[in-house]
Length: 247
Image (tube, rainbow, N blue to C red):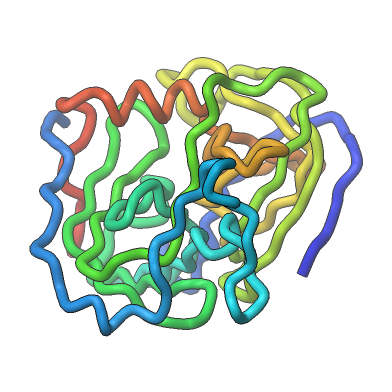
C-alpha cells in the first residue's frame, strides 16, 4: 500500500481525475441535519498531537488514512473517480474537476462504507470543491500553520485509479506558476507520486497536517498541489463557492 518517490524535474501538466467515458458567487452549502450515529462504523478522531492522532483503528488504519475518501462521479454521460479528505465531521475537500457535471456522487470511506452526500459547491478561483455529508466522517486531520518549504517531507493519501487506499511520499521541490488555471497563481511542486484518481488527495506534512490538495501531475511524474494558504483563503471567503454543476 505504501510507495515512495525520489526527485525529478517537471514541465507539461495533466489533470488527475480518472475518467471512464466522461468527459460565481455564492456561499458554502449549509450543514445537513444530523442523522442517527449508529449508521457509521467508527467515531470521528481528534488528530491533535495531544489526542494521539497517529493511533491505529481496530482494523489497522491510522488517522490520516481514515480521513481519506474515494469519490465516484456518475456523470450525465461519463464515469470518473477521484479522492478527497475530511476537514471536519461533515465536510470534505476535493477538486472542482472531480465533482463537476455530476448526476450522482458516490463517496466511500477507507473501510468501504458509503457516505451519504448532502450539498456540493465549487470554487471559482482554484480547482477546489467542498462536499457536505449527511453521515459523519470517521476522521479528520489538522491544517498546518503555514505552507511548506522546499525540502519538506510530504505524504499523499488517496485512491489512485479508484483502487485501494495508497500512501506515497516525497518532498516539496518548490513553487511554480499554475498553467492549468492562470488565476490561481503559484502552486506547490512535489515528487510524491500520484496517478489519475489521486485528484483531491490530501498532502500532509511529517506531523500529519494538511499542507495542500493534489490536483494534477507533470509529464515526468511530479505532483502539483493547491497550497494550504490558498485553501484557507478560499474557505474563509463566503463568496468563493457556488453550487456544483450537474446534469
